[in-house]
Image (tube, rainbow, N blue to C red; front, side, top):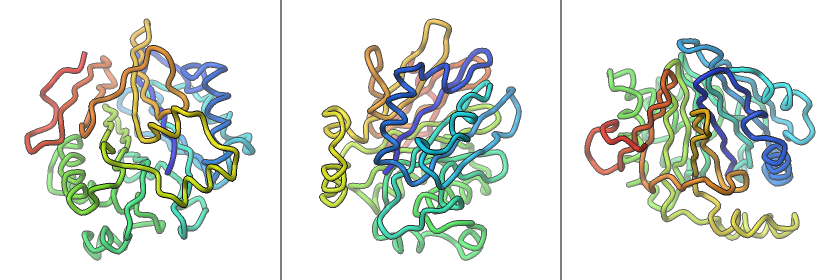
Length: 273
């Protein structure tokens, strides 16, 4: 389980500017639990391949984290990792993952992991660099892209397939490429398991909203047109919850947002705002 944050700015911005002092403090406080690594991916200019920086260290203890979130870019996304029990805490398992022009981060756990592994071809498994179910999720999307499917629809197709196999799992994810940010909000029936709740209690608990609505993804548009996406624990007043079981695409060139329910139809037709 993890925390996610992303922005798309009409101009150049930074994650720390968009979070603000209170947001950074909240994000770092969440690293007390989500301390199994951090990651950042950013597009400096429209058309650039996302740059990825990540570490197996806690964001609260790694000075490179503050340097990363202070890096200027047209769009960026961040990740705090709370490792699935039994998976190694190391750099190769930290999010975001990148393949070609696309970076990917996930908040959730697909158990049993052998079920998602069985969905992948031997070639896709051989290309993986780590051990996580999240990277397997991304590998499934890459297989769809190799067939010529556009990123939003490839993502939706994989989420529909995973939802059938993992009806109670969170499939929340963010993908960033040269031209768009794709946000999956697919966690309508997801709840924290008992062992995770016990760990939270041992660490002194988390804010009520964070516990009760852990898997919600929220968004807002700032006065300057910047689109912000965040997990609970960072999002505050003025944020709206993204529609459940949906895929939202934010265009990097003009901030246009399109949201479609997962359903069975094509993704990318309905305008959010």
